[in-house]
Length: 85
Image 1 (tube, one colour):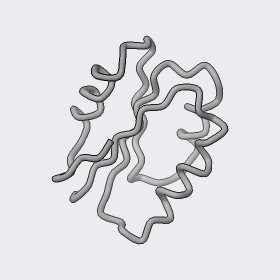
Image 2 (cartoon, one colour):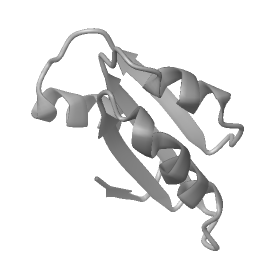
Image 3 (tube, one colour):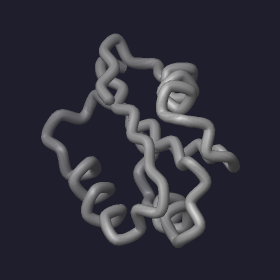
Image 4 (cartoon, helix red, strand yellow):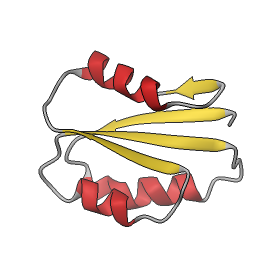
């Protein structure tokens, strides 16, 4: 795995389908996308779970723990040589 992309989301259902489609349609394929959900109360999690791309993984955090802790959570799941936020 060359690249890990960490994205932190909270209540982003209106953008999720286009974001996930953009990831899935990349010409560069040696990546994983780690999405950390920060306690969404809308349909963000459902949209991500229904998207079928094995390179995209969702991790949910129930409490709003702050950006630094969320980034650290994302880093724990990365397998790539390079990490992008």
